[in-house]
Amino acid sequence: MRKDSDVADRTGPDEELMRALYEEHAAALLAFVSRLVAGDRQRAEDVVQETLLRAWRNADRLRGATGSVRPWLVTVARRIVIDNHRSRQARPREVDPAPLEQIPAEDEIDRALRLMTISDALDDLSQAHREALIETYFRGRTVSEAAEVLGVPAGTVRSRVFYALRSMRLSLQERGVTA
Image (cartoon, rainbow, N blue to C red):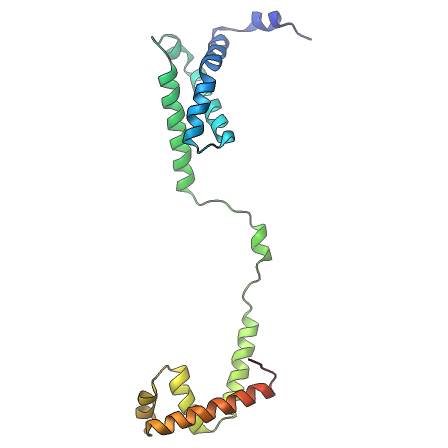
């Protein structure tokens, strides 16, 4: 085991400065940074550590400074927080891809089978009923518009749509499709 005096003999002026900075300013700096990072203690500690590291890199400049170095430390810490915030905003947030594997992908086979079944059921209808249904449901026309396109009265279109839907329902039930 080493004695504290052995360690103290090997410390230089930079280490002494860092110890003094830590003892005098670390608690206040941590409290200040904690407010800036919304109370995230781990981020606050990282910022304080980075601030003190920059102070160590600038030890010559700080040693010659007159007055307190706390304003310099606070400014550096604030800039580190701002830089971290900007870097997080500059790139998209990283997410864990594992939950994405659990989300079922939309299955195009089911959609294709549904469309085939509906198409087969439409083929079972008479030409007049199929045309009325296609004009009103699939092309989104009103009864009046469909009547004009088909060249029949609006009442006829309503009647054909009614019977076409009834036939479609029966045809789909025969194919095992339930509502």
